Amino acid sequence: MFGRRGLPHIVSAIVVMAALAACSSVSTVRVQPENVAAGPGLRPIAAIQVNATTGYILFIPIPGKVDLDRVVNRMLIVAAKTMGADKVANLEFQVTPDSGIWSLRKLLGWRSARASGVAVQVEAAPVDPVEDEGPEPPPSAGRGAEPALDETR
Image (tube, rainbow, N blue to C red; front, side, top):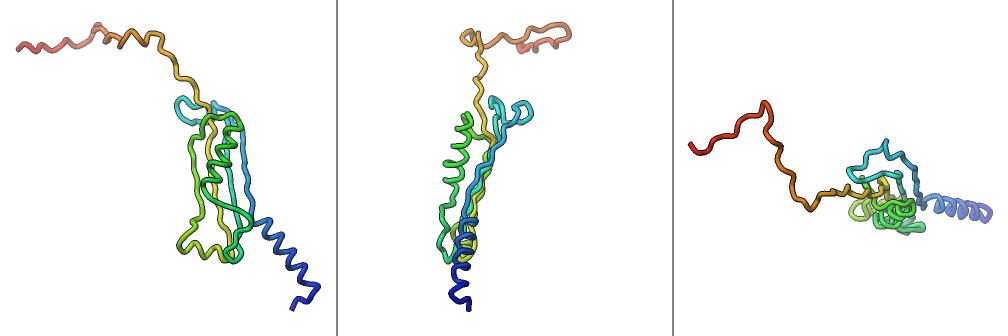
């Protein structure tokens, strides 16, 4: 049907499709700590999003591995640590399932995983200079305070 001349073009097209079908990316943006809320004691430094996709032809992945371990531990957390973060806050992730009816997608399709979060530095907790002195005394009853109840009745 294609002849000898058409076969190299088909092979080339399949190779190009395979190269485009399997990829991963890490996207980062530095943020201003005063404009992004990450939680008490956390100073946000960057927002990070990672994506990984692999194509399948007849149940053969082209070329790689897509799972949550890769996108969260090997891509997202590594990128955050590289940027000087101590932790990742507000972690979100998703992955195309690998079993059940989703297995049919491997016949001719793709599988993808995504993770995102805010890279943060942990700020030191404030130090209480009188920590060893014990709890503070209760506030004294001043003007307008209600009298204490007499329990001797």
